[in-house]
Amino acid sequence: MKRYSIRLLAAFVVCIGLGILFGYLASMISDRSIDRFDTAIIGAIQGLETPWLTKMMQFITMFGWGLPVIILSIGVIVHLVFILNYRRQAFLFFIVVGATPLLNIVLKAYFQRERPMIHRIMEANGYSFPSGHSMIAFSFYSILAYILWKNVNSRNGRKMLVLVSGFMILAIGISRVYLGVHFPSDVLGGFLVSAIWVISALAVFRWLERQRKMV
Image 1: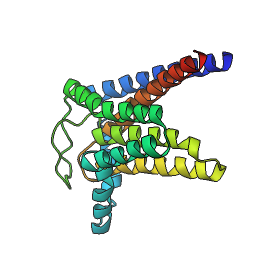
Image 2 (image 1 turned 60 degrees about the vertical axis):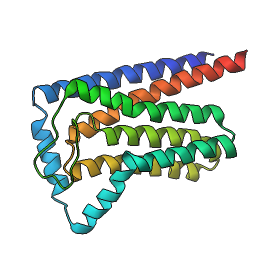
Image 3 (image 1 turned 30 degrees about the horizontal axis):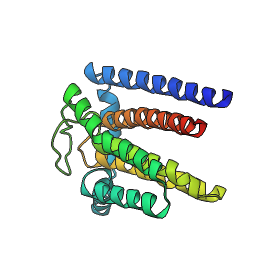
Image 4 (image 1 turned 180 degrees about the horizontal axis):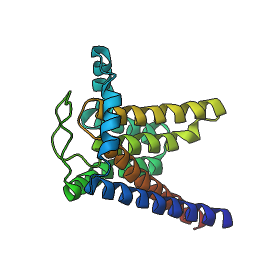
């Protein structure tokens, strides 16, 4: 009981800390003090532009939004429900991933930041902050890694799971900057918001699981 309370408190403290960081980032965007940082990072990443890297980034970025994510999500839910019999975990996955784009729409409508116009490799509509691809990538791959953790018993297997998930999240975020459709601060903001959302959802999920076992 004591250990559980400490974990719950730790999750709350982490979420508060991440929320403060997001608020500070938003304020820097508002007063444009983040502009120099954004410009420097964009220059460094887009300075690597080559035809093959552009094709790779266009491929990677597809796994952060739209039809590919929907297809993957359906596959994950079907696998969790009908093969692993993880019905509650499937519901957790559905809630976390499904609510993320809705949260992104609300935040973008509130901040209304225009997209960068420095060097646009591909086109994108709507507002810029926070990055929807980054938010969905973080929610999708982090919650999937958490759920699949139970099926991986070896230490090396779990390390690989974390590395692959981390790579996909970071690669999708970088792809948005490389393709010229987001500022780096958009990506960072997306990661922060989704981290708060995922940690909060997991805390509630664990609490409900504990209450179910105590009945």
